[in-house]
Length: 47
Image (cartoon, rainbow, N blue to C red; front, side, top):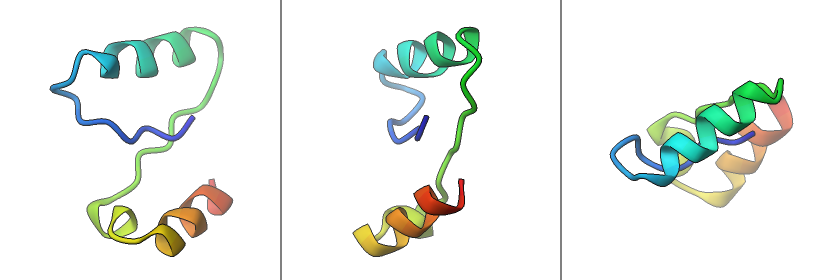
């Protein structure tokens, strides 16, 4: 699961805990990885 939302949004709880409780791994990209699509896609492939 790619964690992209900020922890201050209410969707964060659903994205994080629903996935973790179902056995998924959580991948949180850095700000640099979020800057452009190519960098984000490389992050997704790595994780």
